[in-house]
Image (cartoon, rainbow, N blue to C red):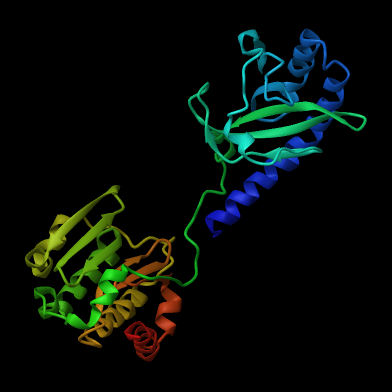
Length: 318
């Protein structure tokens, strides 16, 4: 699973690699007809189908004025000739005096979609004539298997400084969920292993649980302590075979819940406020009274003992 920055760079690198050669060839063709607008339009029309996923092609001069029509597969919009493109988002970056450059993502006022533009310098000998711009709709660039997925490693995020600054003015107050923690954990285990709950968040301090279920993954159900401690709650969730694709074993759920309990009661000042576990992506989250949050794979969490967390949280005391 790749972090989002790595995926963005990979997609832009793939796009640059794909369009570099056809845009370079197009630039050479356009160079010879740069001063003939109709011939320039025809060159762009002849080449747009050779550039994969390209929606629009156009040429503009060094002052940012479009000198060609707006070219699209099978047609040309001549009303775009002479438009001032100098305020386009991609002109905020340094322009390429050789080769190509990719813009950042921006919202196209023409297509009303998010786009990326590839800019190709057009040169005649040592003189820069202008640029060819090729627009690509973002929905086509991201419509593949390399969608963003959560990084599978420990991540720590510092919380609200206001909360951390008053940390020693607070103390854990026994909640109703704390009083019934073993029963709550047992019910959660049953729901996750037999009733199709794949993601669970336990709010220990406020005494509630949120569940995401396979049959309706875009919604979640919130239950207070009274509902969670009632063993009949399982009747509200149909039986569901434990998924083979799950990255968390049922016995690991028990280990995780046991560790959650230890972290809840380990210290009266710095304690676990809420926690979550997702059996499908194998990740869990922890939020402590200092408002610091941690995200990590279940296996890594199980490997760390209570001593690790007491040491980690002790640093927050300082």
